[in-house]
Image (cartoon, rainbow, N blue to C red; front, side, top):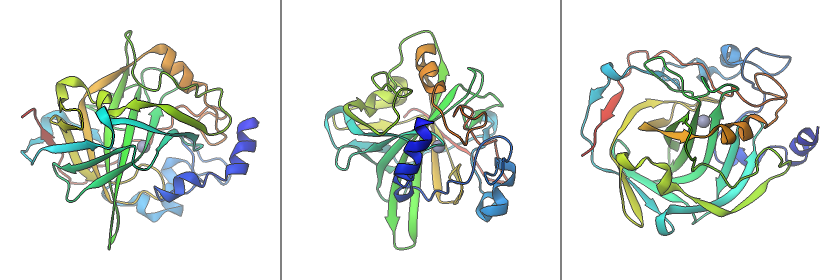
Length: 285
Ligand SMILES: [Zn+2]
């Protein structure tokens, strides 16, 4: 109830500025005015497009490709980012403070993209939660680092996706944040080192930048309505470990528009057809 009150106060406008976002959707079955994924296309035609996300990545079908190095440059030492934690009703999000984030360029990207927010998709059980699947396997969650570039023709996004899998050992993701108990936006001033989020065997680390060198990439869409097809996906190959404790924290989050209201978990869109697109694979240099 407190969350509902909060939603009406904040109007959930925060995420609108960054991602074109419409609130009248949910996961699972349609309920009243809130459409489930199978009906999103009725209200947002782009969700029925031919370059939608997420997809299942069939690793044997991915084509090896050499790009220029994909470089994440940090605004601060080791990529310490600060921001504001928000419950956007569909996922928990960390909105990054301006000038305290990161930039992304190279790889399959043209131009430079700026980090705007992180958010997290996760399951109600450990065996599900990720949006992208790997050879049909679903992970416990998927972290999206959303970078944006504004051009004369409109916005372009690059999303670095990190699969999250429940493991016994320590998690580095949001372990300071008391997400479940927050019924308002929370300053996240302790910060989080985004350099530390990219698994060590997949990047070359420097104090002010990291070179990502093992990922899958393809052209797709935002995975929430309006599902616009202006996203370059960069899915890091090794997954991040998460603890039961951390997943329990996320699973306590509530929303009236989840798959199993009041719980937010299972906030992932089903995989979409590839429709002839190619998934490229970048190996360690
Ligand atoms: Zn996402």
